[in-house]
Length: 312
Image (cartoon, rainbow, N blue to C red):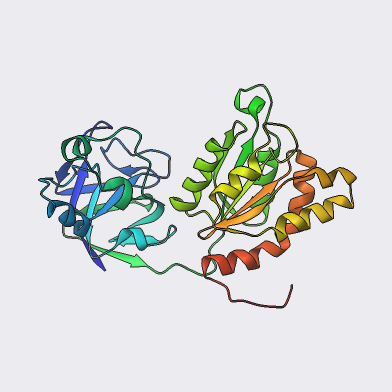
């Protein structure tokens, strides 16, 4: 149990937020009157009062709202709370969707003191249920249910697709299959081939959004620009190549060209990353083969399942 010490809003993005005494949380939008509200996953930002106090102890004179945070709360180390967790404030309900953020343009605080804690310590939520809130309200962290759906992200790699010269058919095919199996697909991306753009997005999805599994499609062949495996290897802490090897073995029963796949699979923190082929037909065949077995591994990875030597 924690407490709200400040509520802050701004009418425009990119400026310091100002404290107010009370506010209305709008379902699937954010705080009424705040510029960061909208149909996206970063509707309401939270920052720990304890982290602000640590920053002040270094000599910085900062007011509530200076870092762009909506809610200043005490009693939680927010960065240690897993994505998907929910906060109850009276009748209102928030769901944690992202830990930290990328800082593309430094804020006024950074320019003034050379540092800003929001990219490291801030977290973001979406409003599942609206309601009125005020300074001094208790905020309760609810336990995560073990049977919650797995979250997934899909990244399509294609130079022509990213330039609008080719329709992405594999990404939507993956999404359709995952949603039929009960996965919650929280992001889909279309990127040009290459290492760094993909590596950056894989790291963000694993570290900030804590996605359970990321599926890539494309970029696993012999072309000079086919660098999806290299980007995946670069960001992974551990490899889990049994998945990629199983897909190749199964695909070889369909076509001998499956031996030309360079796909890999691995783990970054608690996120599984799986390289899928580029064609919709091969994607469908591969997913049909591996999906029945993935849930056990994903349960273990996120800590909701036990080790088991038996198979389904």
